[in-house]
Image (cartoon, rainbow, N blue to C red; front, side, top):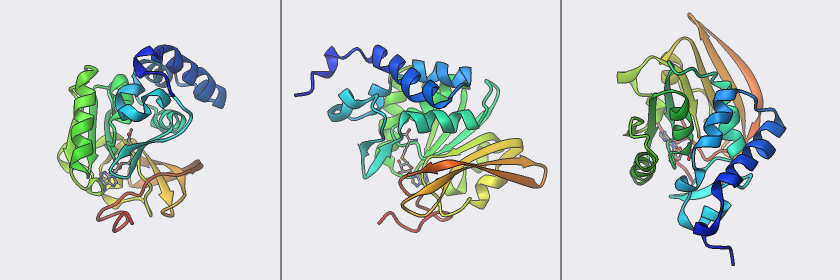
Length: 222
Ligand code: SAH
């Protein structure tokens, strides 16, 4: 029997996660480490998995979706090189955990989720930890969020068949876009940076995400 969640020292597990899963693998951006030490991941996982909240793995969050492994959240956030003045767009709110990490670094966070039940759950979780300023929209995020563009940083937290054109166009000058792109079952993490009309692309390792489903993504999640 797992011990009841109320008896678990989540703060200790969180600090151990940062040391053993993040710093040990090279995450070094101070604002990312601070955010990962601050955000209570246990609030964003379903009750049944709470005791596993700091495991080195993704976990189910319902509706066939997952909350990413802590290391992947930290790596993607580090690649965005955020400052407190940056406007950030996330595609794939899911549990709201990644949005909470972003919102601990900058107050300007916009997040789009296609499944309304998840968007509502994320809203509740973010409010409960004092982050009501995160803006959440239920929609197909492959269109971006044009009303609030341009963004200094865009993070796509589901696997795409390619880079959705609207997201590139909503990047500000010197903007950074992090996106897993590849097949439905495995992807490579790409960082795309904008300089005027030019976009440079670098690769940052393999990863596995649930599919990005929408007009500029996969056509369905089967
Ligand atoms: N960032 C999330 C991880 C979510 S998993 C977290 O921290 O928990 C990926 C999410 O992307 C799923 O919730 C899925 O519903 C969502 N998604 C997939 N395609 C989408 C699209 N076109 N627009 C918005 N969200 C999408």
